[in-house]
Length: 66
Image (tube, rainbow, N blue to C red; front, side, top):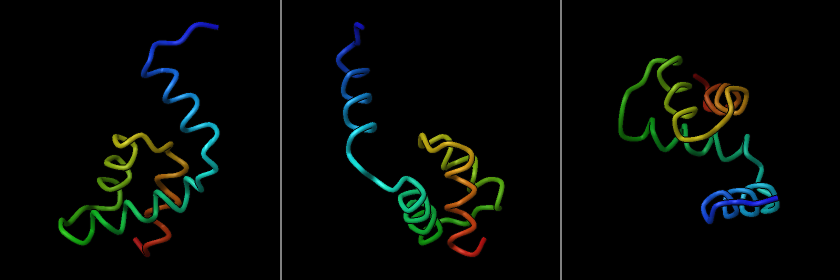
């Protein structure tokens, strides 16, 4: 299978780094709320824009009590 440089970096880095993406989404949500106000849906959309899945974004927003 062939990959572009960035595609390979994404494939290897994200698939094998062992990160808890739900936890990362929660941390990212909290960091956004430290400096800007979002609606719940707006924050979910922002996390999705950052590359989190919808489920991860919802988890992150819920985890910070939003």
